[in-house]
Image 1 (tube, rainbow, N blue to C red):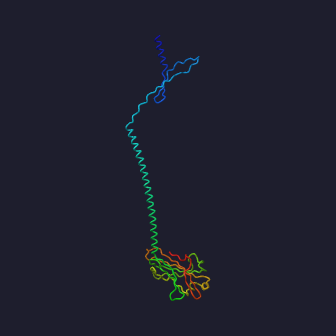
Image 2: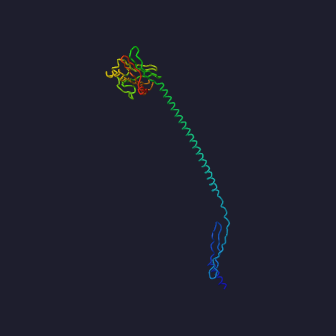
Image 3: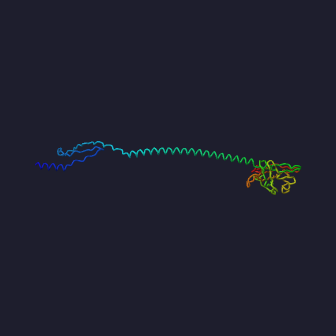
Length: 282
């Protein structure tokens, strides 16, 4: 009997293994109780009533912070501060460079303006010191009805006359003259030798006499129209001259002029006339 009871208990222990604990948290485990025999409730099995036991284990001890991790963390922190300081220093340097660049641009603009002003002043001085030939009309001394067209140097340096050109135009009045000087060109004349005009000096470039009227008119019919005041006779010309002290190859200057020749039946006259386009100075 005793042997039979031990065998039955041993078999029951092998069949009913204890349930595994269930982990519900970091350190909490639930152990279900062994299953009990199901009770009979009026021929119907009753619901399982298995109470649970909650066992709380103590929290694990904190792991110590290794020394090399501390050194790495400190080095990272130092690098962060150094990077921040480098970025701020770079931004400050860029701002200084920007300010210096703006100051340099302002200085460059100021220097350019000063250079332009100096260039304009130099050009003004050069123009003021260069020769300027102007045209005038004067009666020929001792000769009646004779006139001289003269060129006078009004500049501050000597001039050399290179050539002169004269033209003859006919028009009802000045308003009927062409936009640019044109017409029959008289024989171009070039001085036999260099004509040098010092400041204040003048020279006659053309002499007009009463007996020159038929030659200037060209035909007898044209002369009759001039004498009858049906048309006017205009003499236009150009004087080409150079600055005597200017470098070789420098562009020559020109002075244009225009006069109205008045040919009456007994008297003659000559006066400057014509639109501004006929009195251009270069």
